[in-house]
Image (cartoon, rainbow, N blue to C red; front, side, top):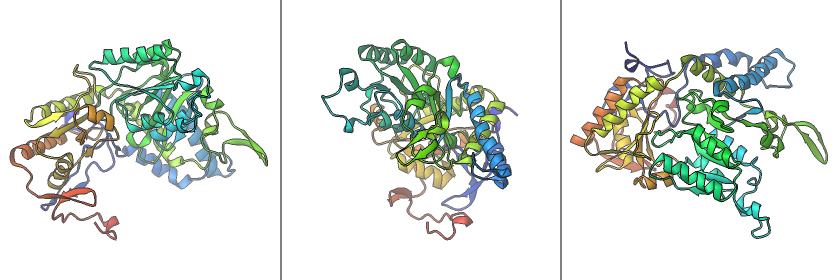
Length: 449
């Protein structure tokens, strides 16, 4: 059987059946990997093995605590290998990508004070120039984080080459400490040339930070080889949905910065008048960490590393998805650049005559297909792409099969040709059928729908 006819790897819930609004049950077709990916079965198995030994880490003398401490600290080495971290890079565990980027923002020299708290006109010239440059295509995690510190936002151009030239010009015009970019768009899946961007940043004395939330689960990254200084990503997109994120990057800024959180675990000693803070990753990991989440991230890195390069397999499915949607009259797919960039399996589209929320509700209620509608925490980008009211996003992952994509394409074509079989209304901010008899699973039976 060819790779496109079966899932690349086993994910939890791959055979789950969901109810249809018109009656009957059908296997759930998950096209929402760009939001959160299901757990790999290997990851779930690792967590099941860990739970009998679950304990707090670092200072416990008990056997279970020592097991968890060994696992937790070993996870740093696993993650470092997975992303090709360089010597001097720290691996810090956080809650998610957003948390990682906010941590980094607090550590950037010259950008660590929000614009609202600066005293305008009283700082040296070098301090008044915002120290971070970002593109306008970013997810809000990599836009709002830096906006708080007065980041300079560069509008993307018609081509990637022209966009890089615009960044080059901006960095040459005014000095910056950091260029912050996404590794791949969460709206279109288009992949950015990170090694080239890193070279541009370094040529002007800046470092580069990459929002890798979308890229890391689908492409192998080598920080040392590409020259990336900081990488942020989330476990919940990496087939490890247990609430952990990661920041990997050069240790000097992080060691010099104030601790991201104040609390136990980040200090050597505490007195009445102050504290002696640790350096290294623990400096920014105050409080009891998410041991289960970190174990899941490490297990996912091991599993994905064993699978090897996924691009050849996923590119076949991505082409089937994008080409199939492009072939349906009345469906418009979104792209940042028209030059056929390398792209992950993320395709956002609109359907003439229907709001994105109705399209998504129809696919769910009548076909058992799960995807996302809205503006995907990328409002400026959707506006520039001509979809200020939002779009529908289909995204694939390791559990996606060719038959899943065929099902989505046929359902979308049916909508365009015949319209929905049911009537849809908005209720409490959510669009669904006027009469929706679909039951919750038993474990939610005590909650009203």
